[in-house]
Image (cartoon, rainbow over all chains, first blue to last red; front, top):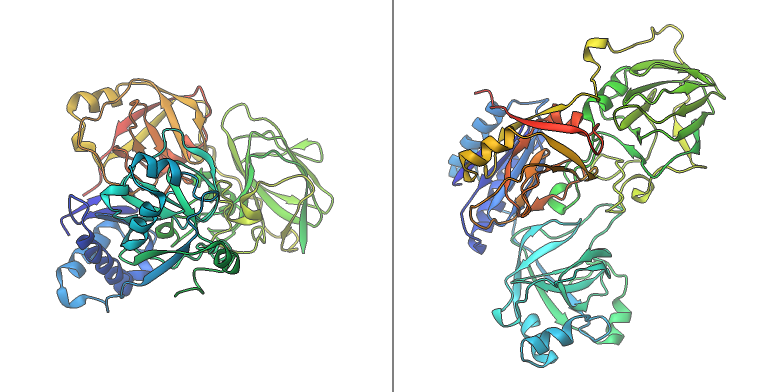
Length: 232
Length: 295
Protein backbone atom coordinates (compact mmCIF):
# COMPACT_ATOMS: atom_id res chain seq x y z
CA UNK A 1 0.00 0.00 0.00
CA UNK A 2 1.42 3.33 -1.05
CA UNK A 3 -1.26 5.85 -0.22
CA UNK A 4 -4.61 6.00 1.54
CA UNK A 5 -6.94 8.89 0.80
CA UNK A 6 -10.29 9.79 2.30
CA UNK A 7 -12.92 10.61 -0.32
CA UNK A 8 -16.18 11.43 1.45
CA UNK A 9 -18.28 10.55 4.51
CA UNK A 10 -17.96 6.79 4.01
CA UNK A 11 -15.38 6.12 1.28
CA UNK A 12 -11.62 5.98 0.96
CA UNK A 13 -9.24 4.83 -1.75
CA UNK A 14 -5.97 2.95 -1.46
CA UNK A 15 -3.35 3.30 -4.19
CA UNK A 16 -0.92 0.43 -4.65
CA UNK A 17 1.29 1.85 -7.37
CA UNK A 18 1.53 4.50 -10.04
CA UNK A 19 1.65 2.45 -13.23
CA UNK A 20 -0.46 -0.46 -14.42
CA UNK A 21 1.34 -3.67 -13.51
CA UNK A 22 -0.18 -7.15 -13.32
CA UNK A 23 2.00 -7.76 -10.26
CA UNK A 24 -0.02 -5.20 -8.26
CA UNK A 25 -3.22 -7.19 -8.66
CA UNK A 26 -2.26 -9.79 -6.10
CA UNK A 27 -1.50 -7.02 -3.54
CA UNK A 28 -4.91 -5.53 -4.22
CA UNK A 29 -6.65 -8.92 -3.98
CA UNK A 30 -4.80 -9.70 -0.78
CA UNK A 31 -5.83 -6.38 0.75
CA UNK A 32 -9.43 -6.94 -0.27
CA UNK A 33 -9.47 -10.50 1.15
CA UNK A 34 -7.89 -9.30 4.37
CA UNK A 35 -10.49 -6.58 4.84
CA UNK A 36 -13.34 -8.98 4.12
CA UNK A 37 -12.01 -11.53 6.57
CA UNK A 38 -11.40 -9.13 9.45
CA UNK A 39 -13.99 -6.38 9.08
CA UNK A 40 -16.38 -7.56 6.42
CA UNK A 41 -19.36 -6.51 8.53
CA UNK A 42 -18.17 -2.88 8.40
CA UNK A 43 -17.79 -2.82 4.61
CA UNK A 44 -20.50 -1.92 2.11
CA UNK A 45 -18.52 -2.11 -1.15
CA UNK A 46 -15.02 -2.50 -2.50
CA UNK A 47 -13.98 -1.61 -6.04
CA UNK A 48 -10.57 -2.88 -7.15
CA UNK A 49 -9.22 -1.34 -10.37
CA UNK A 50 -5.73 -1.61 -11.92
CA UNK A 51 -3.72 0.15 -9.22
CA UNK A 52 -6.31 1.04 -6.59
CA UNK A 53 -8.96 -0.24 -4.21
CA UNK A 54 -11.95 1.93 -3.30
CA UNK A 55 -13.57 0.97 0.01
CA UNK A 56 -17.04 2.07 1.12
CA UNK A 57 -17.55 1.46 4.84
CA UNK A 58 -20.71 1.60 6.94
CA UNK A 59 -20.54 4.91 8.77
CA UNK A 60 -23.54 3.91 10.90
CA UNK A 61 -21.30 1.31 12.53
CA UNK A 62 -17.84 2.88 12.53
CA UNK A 63 -16.25 6.31 12.12
CA UNK A 64 -13.68 7.09 9.46
CA UNK A 65 -10.96 7.50 12.08
CA UNK A 66 -11.72 4.08 13.58
CA UNK A 67 -11.96 2.37 10.22
CA UNK A 68 -8.77 3.90 8.82
CA UNK A 69 -6.89 2.93 11.98
CA UNK A 70 -8.20 -0.63 11.72
CA UNK A 71 -7.26 -0.78 8.07
CA UNK A 72 -3.72 0.48 8.64
CA UNK A 73 -3.16 -2.01 11.45
CA UNK A 74 -4.45 -4.92 9.37
CA UNK A 75 -2.31 -4.07 6.39
CA UNK A 76 0.82 -3.52 8.43
CA UNK A 77 0.63 -7.01 9.90
CA UNK A 78 1.84 -9.63 7.42
CA UNK A 79 0.43 -12.48 9.44
CA UNK A 80 -3.08 -11.12 9.21
CA UNK A 81 -3.24 -12.34 5.63
CA UNK A 82 -6.39 -14.27 4.97
CA UNK A 83 -5.94 -17.50 3.04
CA UNK A 84 -5.22 -15.90 -0.31
CA UNK A 85 -7.95 -16.72 -2.79
CA UNK A 86 -6.39 -18.53 -5.73
CA UNK A 87 -6.84 -16.86 -9.10
CA UNK A 88 -9.25 -18.78 -11.31
CA UNK A 89 -8.75 -19.58 -14.97
CA UNK A 90 -11.47 -19.16 -17.54
CA UNK A 91 -11.71 -20.30 -21.14
CA UNK A 92 -14.18 -18.45 -23.32
CA UNK A 93 -15.23 -20.01 -26.63
CA UNK A 94 -15.47 -17.46 -29.44
CA UNK A 95 -16.88 -17.61 -32.94
CA UNK A 96 -14.57 -15.30 -34.84
CA UNK A 97 -16.79 -15.23 -37.93
CA UNK A 98 -17.57 -12.36 -40.27
CA UNK A 99 -21.19 -11.64 -39.36
CA UNK A 100 -20.43 -11.59 -35.63
CA UNK A 101 -16.90 -10.26 -35.91
CA UNK A 102 -18.11 -6.83 -36.92
CA UNK A 103 -14.67 -5.19 -37.11
CA UNK A 104 -12.44 -8.20 -37.79
CA UNK A 105 -11.96 -7.52 -41.49
CA UNK A 106 -11.34 -3.79 -41.15
CA UNK A 107 -9.04 -4.24 -38.16
CA UNK A 108 -6.94 -6.97 -39.75
CA UNK A 109 -6.58 -4.83 -42.87
CA UNK A 110 -5.46 -1.89 -40.76
CA UNK A 111 -2.92 -4.15 -39.06
CA UNK A 112 -1.66 -5.56 -42.37
CA UNK A 113 -2.49 -9.12 -41.52
CA UNK A 114 -4.98 -11.78 -42.51
CA UNK A 115 -8.03 -12.17 -40.27
CA UNK A 116 -6.84 -15.64 -39.28
CA UNK A 117 -3.54 -14.20 -38.06
CA UNK A 118 -5.38 -11.70 -35.88
CA UNK A 119 -7.54 -14.49 -34.49
CA UNK A 120 -4.45 -16.61 -33.76
CA UNK A 121 -2.73 -13.77 -31.95
CA UNK A 122 -5.84 -12.91 -29.89
CA UNK A 123 -6.46 -16.53 -28.85
CA UNK A 124 -2.83 -17.41 -28.16
CA UNK A 125 -2.49 -15.43 -24.95
CA UNK A 126 -3.77 -15.71 -21.41
CA UNK A 127 -5.18 -12.39 -20.19
CA UNK A 128 -5.49 -11.03 -16.66
CA UNK A 129 -8.61 -9.38 -15.22
CA UNK A 130 -7.60 -5.83 -14.24
CA UNK A 131 -10.97 -4.52 -13.17
CA UNK A 132 -14.71 -4.92 -13.69
CA UNK A 133 -16.91 -1.93 -14.45
CA UNK A 134 -18.57 0.32 -17.06
CA UNK A 135 -21.48 -2.13 -16.94
CA UNK A 136 -22.37 -5.08 -14.71
CA UNK A 137 -20.14 -8.01 -15.66
CA UNK A 138 -17.77 -6.12 -17.98
CA UNK A 139 -14.24 -7.35 -17.20
CA UNK A 140 -11.25 -5.41 -18.56
CA UNK A 141 -8.63 -7.95 -19.68
CA UNK A 142 -5.05 -7.18 -20.51
CA UNK A 143 -2.80 -7.00 -22.21
CA UNK A 144 -3.28 -7.80 -25.87
CA UNK A 145 -0.29 -8.21 -28.16
CA UNK A 146 0.74 -4.79 -29.54
CA UNK A 147 0.31 -6.17 -33.04
CA UNK A 148 -3.47 -6.25 -32.60
CA UNK A 149 -3.93 -3.32 -30.19
CA UNK A 150 -6.25 -0.63 -31.62
CA UNK A 151 -7.94 2.53 -30.38
CA UNK A 152 -11.69 2.63 -29.83
CA UNK A 153 -13.89 3.29 -32.85
CA UNK A 154 -14.21 6.96 -33.76
CA UNK A 155 -17.98 6.42 -33.84
CA UNK A 156 -19.14 4.07 -31.08
CA UNK A 157 -22.08 1.80 -31.88
CA UNK A 158 -25.36 2.51 -30.13
CA UNK A 159 -25.84 -1.24 -29.76
CA UNK A 160 -23.18 -3.91 -29.46
CA UNK A 161 -24.71 -7.42 -29.26
CA UNK A 162 -24.36 -9.29 -25.96
CA UNK A 163 -21.42 -11.70 -25.97
CA UNK A 164 -19.38 -9.57 -28.39
CA UNK A 165 -15.62 -9.87 -27.90
CA UNK A 166 -13.68 -6.68 -28.51
CA UNK A 167 -10.36 -4.86 -28.39
CA UNK A 168 -9.72 -1.31 -27.17
CA UNK A 169 -6.09 -0.14 -26.98
CA UNK A 170 -4.24 -2.95 -25.23
CA UNK A 171 -7.33 -4.37 -23.53
CA UNK A 172 -9.82 -7.00 -24.56
CA UNK A 173 -13.18 -7.93 -23.10
CA UNK A 174 -16.66 -9.39 -23.56
CA UNK A 175 -19.86 -7.34 -23.57
CA UNK A 176 -22.09 -9.06 -20.99
CA UNK A 177 -25.30 -7.40 -22.26
CA UNK A 178 -26.35 -5.45 -25.32
CA UNK A 179 -24.80 -2.03 -24.68
CA UNK A 180 -23.55 1.02 -26.53
CA UNK A 181 -19.81 0.71 -27.15
CA UNK A 182 -16.75 1.68 -29.11
CA UNK A 183 -14.60 -1.43 -28.87
CA UNK A 184 -13.39 -3.18 -32.06
CA UNK A 185 -15.53 -6.31 -32.23
CA UNK A 186 -13.75 -9.42 -33.47
CA UNK A 187 -16.10 -12.23 -32.50
CA UNK A 188 -18.87 -13.39 -30.19
CA UNK A 189 -19.18 -15.93 -27.41
CA UNK A 190 -22.32 -18.09 -27.16
CA UNK A 191 -22.00 -18.17 -23.37
CA UNK A 192 -23.99 -16.03 -20.96
CA UNK A 193 -21.26 -14.49 -18.87
CA UNK A 194 -23.35 -12.38 -16.50
CA UNK A 195 -26.37 -13.79 -14.64
CA UNK A 196 -28.66 -10.78 -14.38
CA UNK A 197 -31.26 -12.35 -12.06
CA UNK A 198 -28.76 -13.13 -9.34
CA UNK A 199 -26.33 -10.39 -10.25
CA UNK A 200 -23.69 -13.12 -10.47
CA UNK A 201 -20.38 -12.82 -12.27
CA UNK A 202 -17.64 -15.36 -11.58
CA UNK A 203 -14.52 -13.35 -12.44
CA UNK A 204 -12.40 -11.35 -10.02
CA UNK A 205 -9.34 -9.20 -10.51
CA UNK A 206 -6.23 -11.30 -10.97
CA UNK A 207 -8.10 -14.17 -12.63
CA UNK A 208 -6.88 -15.30 -16.04
CA UNK A 209 -8.89 -15.66 -19.22
CA UNK A 210 -8.13 -17.32 -22.56
CA UNK A 211 -10.20 -17.28 -25.68
CA UNK A 212 -10.57 -20.33 -27.93
CA UNK A 213 -11.90 -20.34 -31.46
CA UNK A 214 -14.98 -22.46 -32.16
CA UNK A 215 -17.02 -23.09 -35.28
CA UNK A 216 -20.64 -22.17 -36.02
CA UNK A 217 -21.90 -25.63 -35.06
CA UNK A 218 -20.25 -25.52 -31.65
CA UNK A 219 -21.56 -21.98 -31.23
CA UNK A 220 -25.12 -23.24 -31.71
CA UNK A 221 -24.53 -26.09 -29.25
CA UNK A 222 -23.24 -23.74 -26.54
CA UNK A 223 -25.65 -20.89 -27.12
CA UNK A 224 -27.27 -19.73 -23.88
CA UNK A 225 -25.08 -21.84 -21.58
CA UNK A 226 -23.78 -19.98 -18.57
CA UNK A 227 -20.10 -19.24 -18.06
CA UNK A 228 -20.73 -20.31 -14.46
CA UNK A 229 -21.47 -23.87 -15.65
CA UNK A 230 -19.09 -24.09 -18.53
CA UNK A 231 -15.39 -24.48 -18.05
CA UNK A 232 -13.24 -26.49 -20.41
CA UNK B 1 -52.21 -7.76 1.06
CA UNK B 2 -52.64 -4.12 0.08
CA UNK B 3 -52.26 -2.83 -3.46
CA UNK B 4 -51.54 0.56 -4.92
CA UNK B 5 -53.22 0.62 -8.30
CA UNK B 6 -51.29 3.00 -10.54
CA UNK B 7 -53.57 5.03 -12.78
CA UNK B 8 -51.08 7.49 -14.23
CA UNK B 9 -47.27 7.70 -14.15
CA UNK B 10 -44.44 9.04 -16.25
CA UNK B 11 -41.18 7.29 -17.12
CA UNK B 12 -39.60 9.21 -14.25
CA UNK B 13 -41.37 7.20 -11.54
CA UNK B 14 -39.20 4.33 -10.31
CA UNK B 15 -38.94 1.91 -7.40
CA UNK B 16 -36.11 2.85 -5.07
CA UNK B 17 -34.63 2.19 -1.66
CA UNK B 18 -31.30 2.98 -0.04
CA UNK B 19 -29.32 1.27 -2.81
CA UNK B 20 -27.29 -1.88 -3.35
CA UNK B 21 -24.62 -3.13 -1.01
CA UNK B 22 -21.81 -5.35 -2.25
CA UNK B 23 -22.33 -5.19 -6.01
CA UNK B 24 -20.01 -2.41 -7.14
CA UNK B 25 -17.01 -4.69 -7.68
CA UNK B 26 -19.09 -6.48 -10.34
CA UNK B 27 -19.94 -3.23 -12.10
CA UNK B 28 -23.44 -2.78 -10.66
CA UNK B 29 -23.98 0.83 -9.68
CA UNK B 30 -24.89 1.78 -6.12
CA UNK B 31 -28.25 3.30 -7.17
CA UNK B 32 -30.69 4.17 -4.35
CA UNK B 33 -32.79 7.29 -3.72
CA UNK B 34 -31.03 10.27 -5.30
CA UNK B 35 -32.25 12.53 -2.48
CA UNK B 36 -31.23 10.41 0.49
CA UNK B 37 -32.48 13.05 2.96
CA UNK B 38 -36.07 13.06 1.71
CA UNK B 39 -36.04 9.27 1.35
CA UNK B 40 -34.91 8.95 4.96
CA UNK B 41 -37.71 11.17 6.26
CA UNK B 42 -40.43 9.52 4.19
CA UNK B 43 -39.68 6.23 5.95
CA UNK B 44 -38.89 7.76 9.35
CA UNK B 45 -42.26 9.54 9.53
CA UNK B 46 -43.93 6.13 9.26
CA UNK B 47 -41.52 4.28 11.53
CA UNK B 48 -40.42 2.11 8.61
CA UNK B 49 -37.04 0.40 8.32
CA UNK B 50 -34.38 2.74 6.97
CA UNK B 51 -34.06 0.69 3.81
CA UNK B 52 -37.78 0.27 3.06
CA UNK B 53 -38.76 0.47 -0.63
CA UNK B 54 -40.50 3.63 -1.87
CA UNK B 55 -41.46 5.25 -5.15
CA UNK B 56 -39.21 8.05 -6.41
CA UNK B 57 -41.48 10.26 -8.52
CA UNK B 58 -40.25 13.20 -10.62
CA UNK B 59 -42.31 16.21 -11.57
CA UNK B 60 -45.70 14.89 -10.55
CA UNK B 61 -48.10 13.55 -13.18
CA UNK B 62 -48.76 10.59 -10.88
CA UNK B 63 -52.13 9.21 -9.83
CA UNK B 64 -52.97 6.02 -7.94
CA UNK B 65 -55.66 4.36 -5.88
CA UNK B 66 -55.07 2.62 -2.56
CA UNK B 67 -56.98 -0.65 -2.43
CA UNK B 68 -56.49 -1.12 1.33
CA UNK B 69 -56.14 1.13 4.35
CA UNK B 70 -52.62 2.14 5.32
CA UNK B 71 -50.52 5.21 6.13
CA UNK B 72 -48.35 7.10 3.69
CA UNK B 73 -45.79 9.89 3.75
CA UNK B 74 -44.59 12.19 0.98
CA UNK B 75 -41.24 13.96 1.29
CA UNK B 76 -39.12 15.99 -1.12
CA UNK B 77 -40.41 18.40 -3.74
CA UNK B 78 -43.87 19.70 -2.90
CA UNK B 79 -46.14 18.21 -5.55
CA UNK B 80 -49.31 19.80 -4.09
CA UNK B 81 -50.55 16.30 -3.37
CA UNK B 82 -54.26 15.64 -3.14
CA UNK B 83 -56.04 12.76 -1.49
CA UNK B 84 -59.57 12.44 -2.88
CA UNK B 85 -59.25 15.96 -4.26
CA UNK B 86 -58.25 17.57 -0.95
CA UNK B 87 -54.71 18.84 -0.41
CA UNK B 88 -52.45 16.90 1.96
CA UNK B 89 -49.27 18.28 3.47
CA UNK B 90 -45.80 17.43 2.25
CA UNK B 91 -43.32 16.11 4.85
CA UNK B 92 -46.15 14.51 6.84
CA UNK B 93 -47.69 11.12 7.44
CA UNK B 94 -51.34 10.59 6.44
CA UNK B 95 -53.91 7.89 7.05
CA UNK B 96 -55.37 6.37 3.94
CA UNK B 97 -58.61 4.36 3.56
CA UNK B 98 -59.43 1.70 0.98
CA UNK B 99 -60.45 3.49 -2.21
CA UNK B 100 -58.55 6.71 -1.48
CA UNK B 101 -57.15 8.38 -4.58
CA UNK B 102 -53.76 10.11 -4.59
CA UNK B 103 -52.71 12.70 -7.11
CA UNK B 104 -49.32 14.38 -7.42
CA UNK B 105 -48.99 17.58 -9.46
CA UNK B 106 -46.12 19.46 -11.04
CA UNK B 107 -43.96 21.04 -8.30
CA UNK B 108 -43.11 24.75 -8.27
CA UNK B 109 -39.59 23.91 -7.11
CA UNK B 110 -37.63 20.73 -6.59
CA UNK B 111 -37.70 17.61 -8.70
CA UNK B 112 -38.32 14.42 -6.75
CA UNK B 113 -40.93 13.24 -4.29
CA UNK B 114 -40.67 10.05 -2.24
CA UNK B 115 -43.89 8.17 -1.59
CA UNK B 116 -43.53 5.79 1.34
CA UNK B 117 -46.21 3.42 2.63
CA UNK B 118 -46.46 1.89 6.12
CA UNK B 119 -44.14 -1.13 6.23
CA UNK B 120 -42.65 -0.25 2.85
CA UNK B 121 -43.66 -1.52 -0.56
CA UNK B 122 -43.33 -5.29 -0.77
CA UNK B 123 -41.12 -5.50 -3.86
CA UNK B 124 -39.22 -8.76 -3.99
CA UNK B 125 -35.58 -8.38 -3.29
CA UNK B 126 -33.31 -8.12 -4.91
CA UNK B 127 -29.91 -7.63 -6.00
CA UNK B 128 -27.42 -7.07 -3.21
CA UNK B 129 -30.19 -6.31 -0.71
CA UNK B 130 -31.90 -3.75 -2.91
CA UNK B 131 -34.89 -3.45 -5.25
CA UNK B 132 -33.56 -0.23 -6.83
CA UNK B 133 -34.51 0.03 -10.52
CA UNK B 134 -31.69 0.96 -12.88
CA UNK B 135 -32.99 1.46 -16.42
CA UNK B 136 -29.59 1.50 -18.12
CA UNK B 137 -28.65 -1.82 -16.51
CA UNK B 138 -32.08 -3.39 -17.01
CA UNK B 139 -31.78 -4.59 -13.41
CA UNK B 140 -33.81 -4.15 -10.24
CA UNK B 141 -37.55 -4.05 -9.68
CA UNK B 142 -39.51 -4.50 -12.90
CA UNK B 143 -36.31 -5.26 -14.83
CA UNK B 144 -35.15 -1.69 -14.32
CA UNK B 145 -38.23 -0.29 -16.06
CA UNK B 146 -40.23 2.59 -14.53
CA UNK B 147 -43.61 2.36 -12.79
CA UNK B 148 -46.47 2.55 -15.28
CA UNK B 149 -50.23 2.86 -15.42
CA UNK B 150 -52.00 -0.42 -14.73
CA UNK B 151 -49.40 -1.76 -12.30
CA UNK B 152 -50.51 -2.89 -8.83
CA UNK B 153 -47.82 -2.31 -6.25
CA UNK B 154 -48.07 -4.47 -3.13
CA UNK B 155 -47.83 -3.37 0.50
CA UNK B 156 -48.75 -5.06 3.77
CA UNK B 157 -52.42 -4.65 4.69
CA UNK B 158 -51.58 -3.27 8.11
CA UNK B 159 -54.32 -0.66 8.13
CA UNK B 160 -53.75 2.68 9.77
CA UNK B 161 -52.93 2.67 13.46
CA UNK B 162 -55.65 4.83 15.00
CA UNK B 163 -53.61 5.22 18.15
CA UNK B 164 -50.61 6.67 16.38
CA UNK B 165 -50.15 10.38 16.25
CA UNK B 166 -49.70 11.84 12.84
CA UNK B 167 -46.08 12.94 12.30
CA UNK B 168 -44.77 15.96 10.45
CA UNK B 169 -41.23 17.16 9.95
CA UNK B 170 -40.62 20.53 11.64
CA UNK B 171 -40.33 23.51 9.30
CA UNK B 172 -36.71 24.18 10.26
CA UNK B 173 -35.69 20.85 8.72
CA UNK B 174 -37.58 21.29 5.47
CA UNK B 175 -35.22 22.29 2.64
CA UNK B 176 -35.86 25.17 0.23
CA UNK B 177 -35.29 23.90 -3.30
CA UNK B 178 -35.83 27.29 -4.92
CA UNK B 179 -32.67 28.78 -3.42
CA UNK B 180 -29.30 28.89 -5.15
CA UNK B 181 -27.44 25.88 -3.82
CA UNK B 182 -24.11 25.79 -2.04
CA UNK B 183 -22.41 22.47 -2.78
CA UNK B 184 -20.00 21.54 -0.02
CA UNK B 185 -17.09 19.63 -1.49
CA UNK B 186 -14.21 17.76 0.10
CA UNK B 187 -10.86 18.07 -1.67
CA UNK B 188 -10.13 14.53 -2.84
CA UNK B 189 -8.81 12.38 -5.69
CA UNK B 190 -6.69 14.56 -8.01
CA UNK B 191 -7.44 17.90 -6.31
CA UNK B 192 -3.74 18.61 -5.79
CA UNK B 193 -3.12 18.41 -9.52
CA UNK B 194 -5.39 21.44 -10.03
CA UNK B 195 -3.42 24.63 -9.41
CA UNK B 196 -4.51 27.44 -7.09
CA UNK B 197 -5.94 29.48 -9.97
CA UNK B 198 -8.19 26.58 -11.00
CA UNK B 199 -9.28 25.84 -7.46
CA UNK B 200 -10.13 29.52 -6.86
CA UNK B 201 -12.04 29.78 -10.12
CA UNK B 202 -13.95 26.66 -9.25
CA UNK B 203 -15.36 28.11 -6.01
CA UNK B 204 -15.83 31.66 -7.28
CA UNK B 205 -18.14 30.70 -10.09
CA UNK B 206 -21.87 30.28 -10.18
CA UNK B 207 -22.69 27.21 -12.22
CA UNK B 208 -25.98 26.43 -13.91
CA UNK B 209 -27.52 22.96 -13.90
CA UNK B 210 -27.60 21.81 -17.55
CA UNK B 211 -30.28 19.73 -19.22
CA UNK B 212 -27.82 16.81 -19.26
CA UNK B 213 -28.51 16.02 -15.65
CA UNK B 214 -29.99 12.82 -14.30
CA UNK B 215 -29.51 10.10 -11.70
CA UNK B 216 -26.08 9.28 -13.13
CA UNK B 217 -24.84 12.81 -12.59
CA UNK B 218 -25.44 16.52 -12.97
CA UNK B 219 -23.51 18.39 -15.69
CA UNK B 220 -22.90 21.99 -14.78
CA UNK B 221 -22.39 24.88 -17.19
CA UNK B 222 -20.07 27.72 -16.30
CA UNK B 223 -16.44 28.61 -15.89
CA UNK B 224 -14.30 25.79 -17.31
CA UNK B 225 -11.76 24.19 -15.01
CA UNK B 226 -8.55 22.91 -16.60
CA UNK B 227 -6.65 19.84 -15.63
CA UNK B 228 -3.04 19.73 -16.69
CA UNK B 229 -1.93 16.66 -14.79
CA UNK B 230 -0.99 13.28 -16.14
CA UNK B 231 -3.29 10.79 -17.85
CA UNK B 232 -5.27 8.86 -15.30
CA UNK B 233 -5.83 5.18 -14.74
CA UNK B 234 -9.44 4.11 -14.18
CA UNK B 235 -10.41 3.93 -10.51
CA UNK B 236 -13.48 3.47 -8.32
CA UNK B 237 -15.80 6.47 -8.14
CA UNK B 238 -17.29 7.58 -4.81
CA UNK B 239 -20.73 9.22 -4.54
CA UNK B 240 -20.50 12.96 -5.18
CA UNK B 241 -17.18 12.78 -7.08
CA UNK B 242 -16.78 15.87 -9.29
CA UNK B 243 -15.33 14.90 -12.64
CA UNK B 244 -13.60 17.43 -14.88
CA UNK B 245 -13.85 16.20 -18.47
CA UNK B 246 -11.96 17.60 -21.47
CA UNK B 247 -14.36 20.56 -21.90
CA UNK B 248 -13.79 21.65 -18.29
CA UNK B 249 -17.48 21.62 -17.32
CA UNK B 250 -17.83 19.88 -13.95
CA UNK B 251 -20.01 16.80 -13.55
CA UNK B 252 -21.20 15.81 -10.06
CA UNK B 253 -21.62 12.04 -10.09
CA UNK B 254 -24.63 10.60 -8.29
CA UNK B 255 -26.27 7.28 -7.51
CA UNK B 256 -26.46 5.66 -10.96
CA UNK B 257 -22.89 6.64 -11.90
CA UNK B 258 -20.59 4.04 -13.42
CA UNK B 259 -18.46 2.32 -10.83
CA UNK B 260 -15.08 3.14 -12.39
CA UNK B 261 -13.69 5.92 -14.57
CA UNK B 262 -10.50 7.56 -15.74
CA UNK B 263 -11.36 11.27 -15.90
CA UNK B 264 -9.74 13.62 -13.36
CA UNK B 265 -11.76 14.47 -10.25
CA UNK B 266 -11.32 17.59 -8.15
CA UNK B 267 -13.15 16.35 -5.04
CA UNK B 268 -16.33 14.82 -3.61
CA UNK B 269 -19.55 16.68 -2.83
CA UNK B 270 -20.92 15.85 0.64
CA UNK B 271 -23.85 13.51 1.14
CA UNK B 272 -26.14 16.34 2.28
CA UNK B 273 -25.25 18.46 -0.75
CA UNK B 274 -25.83 15.51 -3.10
CA UNK B 275 -29.35 15.14 -1.68
CA UNK B 276 -30.02 18.83 -2.30
CA UNK B 277 -28.50 18.73 -5.79
CA UNK B 278 -30.78 15.85 -6.75
CA UNK B 279 -33.70 18.26 -6.23
CA UNK B 280 -32.37 20.86 -8.67
CA UNK B 281 -33.64 21.33 -12.21
CA UNK B 282 -31.96 22.57 -15.41
CA UNK B 283 -31.40 26.33 -15.09
CA UNK B 284 -30.97 26.26 -11.30
CA UNK B 285 -27.83 27.88 -9.87
CA UNK B 286 -25.21 26.18 -7.75
CA UNK B 287 -21.76 27.09 -6.43
CA UNK B 288 -19.02 25.11 -4.70
CA UNK B 289 -17.59 25.59 -1.24
CA UNK B 290 -14.50 23.76 0.01
CA UNK B 291 -15.11 21.77 3.14
CA UNK B 292 -12.47 19.93 5.08
CA UNK B 293 -12.61 16.63 6.86
CA UNK B 294 -12.72 16.87 10.65
CA UNK B 295 -9.49 15.40 12.01
